[in-house]
Amino acid sequence: MKKKVAIQGIAGSYHDIAARNYFEGEEIEIIGCNTFRDVISTIKKDPSILGMMAIENTIAGSLLQNHELIRESGLQVIGEYKLRISHSLVALPGTNIHDVKEVNSHPIALMQCTDFLDTLPNAKVVEKEDTAMSARWISENQLKGHAAICGKLAAQIYNMEVLAEGIETNKRNFTRFLAIADRWTADEMLKGEDKNKASVVFALPTAGSLSKVLSVLSFYDMNLSKIQSLPIIGREWEYLFYINLTFTDYLRYKQALDAIRPLTKDLKILGEYAEGKQSV
Image (cartoon, rainbow, N blue to C red; front, side):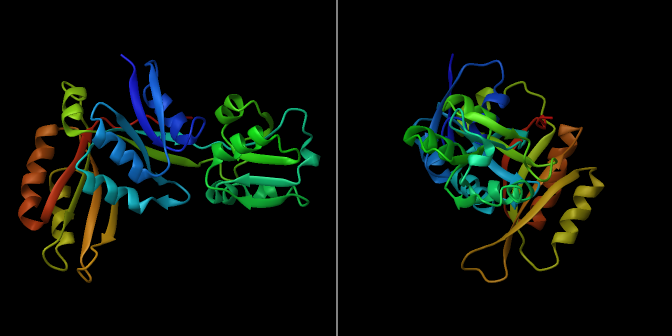
């Protein structure tokens, strides 16, 4: 049965690539959304639809708003995929790289390719809302002398020519994506799956109690792979803590959560799943 996957962006975007890699070997239909909030609302309207959302990048850091969107939505994290981001410079077929007068892309993609862009001193750099959309815009309007920075998949979809690939400055550029689903759908999909990772969020009743929580998790041999704090709007100097835990013993993980629950407020499990693969 074909899976429907909602993403922010369009066909050929890095969200599209991550979704296809995560569901490798399965037939999927991509549902493009304008915003991450639209991804959430699309899933809520049709619980059979899954979602793919970027949550952090090794260079740009965390997408803080996406942590909050997932928490507020009540949706469940069912998995993750760590995609190596490899940027290409693409243009209309027959374009010579020395003829490029303008380069279009998302501001973060442009920032990640500054060293390469320095080799094109005569090209104007213009920020656009998306990588793949830049390629589609150039293709649809047959804009000669324009180039886009995007993934190779976008070049294939929009009949563009790759002028240069692997143009990102830092080759260890990865984005971690979370696969999300309606709670009932998640329960069905994860039935019988081996889980060794969890995403959890909580607030703290008093200042200084974070160290107690971390001590308890350490006692139960939980590996804290990420911690991210966000201020609670309207409650000055109070924070939500988003943590990722990896573990080898599911029962011990459950015991650890029971042990920290009295030390926290509003503890919520966002998802329990298998640690994701990383592309090379």
